[in-house]
Image (cartoon, rainbow, N blue to C red; front, side, top):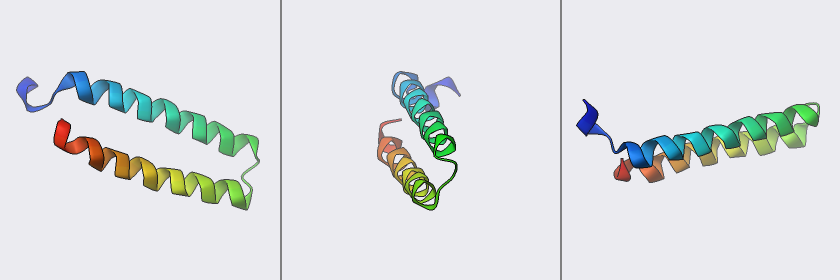
Amino acid sequence: MPQAFKRNIMIPAHIIFTLYLIFQAWLLETTNYTKKACEKFYRFIWMLMNAEYLIYPFI
């Protein structure tokens, strides 16, 4: 159903989220998975989920 979503909002937002997720995963890997880095990555995942809920009404 092409009319179900607003592509001009959904696609760029998810591209940005994906790129930021890849960057955060790279940062986690470069710190050799220290406890502090893992905690920061875990907080980021929750922030990303909240960001998904924030854009939900607009798509």
